[in-house]
Length: 286
Image (tube, rainbow, N blue to C red):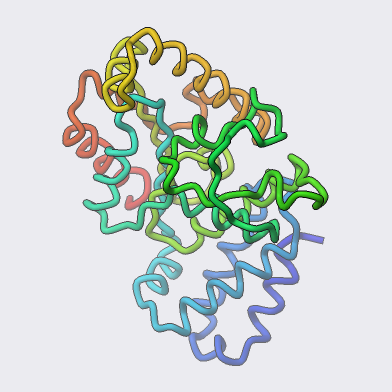
């Protein structure tokens, strides 16, 4: 059975949604079947039922823009993947501001924690995590300030059964997809570019810069020497590559995942944002 079939049946049985007419219901049906063709194979049919509930709530809340985008078949999403020290988060925020889109970053880990049904607690000692350190370091990989980290999902409480990587991957992917379906979002990092690789009306951007320039930026922001910054960045880059390989069997350093790569050593944040918006107009709004 198609993963979306049961969700589509529920869609047409919903009396409250029936008032929107067959045109909108057909648009939602087409959207769900599109997703079924492109989402990772470990996403189950129950998740499509969850998506129907999210779509239903948005419509019943009177979100006319959401309804319009569904009818047009254009659910606008941008993913921004970036190398640490490339000012990619600044570019993502600028894109979100210009588009009027919500920028999603640290929210993804909180959502994943809820899906795993584990507590969210302040992480002070990152080496306490038992997940293979070469594959995942919350501070290094997700580039979050310590004050924003509320994710104890990998370990859970002491004495509790450990979360497996497969469970984490599924929770992460579902979180990313759920935010994408909410529409009008810029999703930063968290393997979103590969999870949403073929997601309809989605622009994938990578922000990069030469290693030496990134090291200078990182050293200044963190308050360390250039030599130490270079050592840390090399480790972080390796972890990110391993993470994308584990999540989607993808090479984050290659162009295949992205529509566009931006070099912030040659572009200001403003110019990089301007180019990204033009690409968005061509890829998503066309």
